[in-house]
Image (cartoon, rainbow, N blue to C red; front, side, top):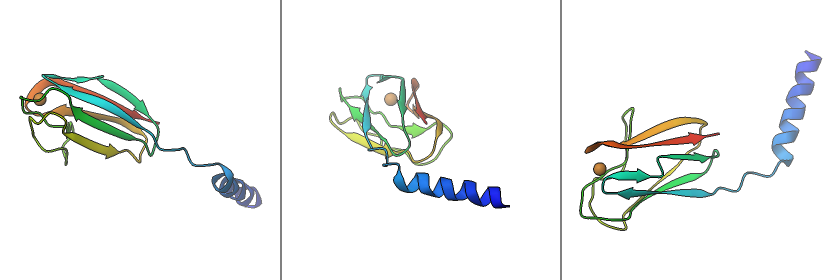
Length: 107
Ligand SMILES: [Cu+2]
């Protein structure tokens, strides 16, 4: 029991003194018809910004396992931003183009 308490105390101390990772963002281009790059590595708390760089063709950014994603649009310059708060590997697709896939690895 004493040891467990000591470990908990050290963990609490570490959380208090280690400065938080400064959030940063990575951009994924939404092209006709591909995401670029197709894989991004980020840290918890970071953002991924998808940016429509070509326009003229409808695309969206949707979690491969379902759930809410971006609007479907063909507007050049449109952006969709998501902050990732959990570690893991997350796949996104464009539901209109089955070849459009991007993997976000959060550690
Ligand atoms: Cu698409």
